Image (tube, rainbow, N blue to C red):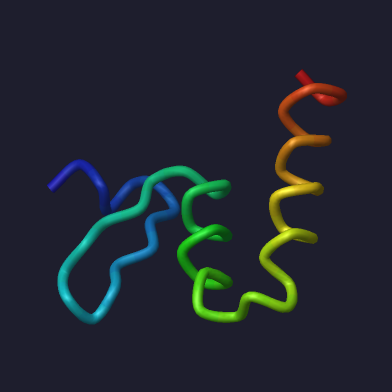
Length: 50
């Protein structure tokens, strides 16, 4: 199984998240109070760091 070599978030329903950005969005999706902060930082990461 290839995903055992990389950081992966495996959820209780068996979903796999290979991207750290997707993992962040998943983990904070239920908390609407911080979701805009997560999106802001992910947008910064994708535009400034890349």
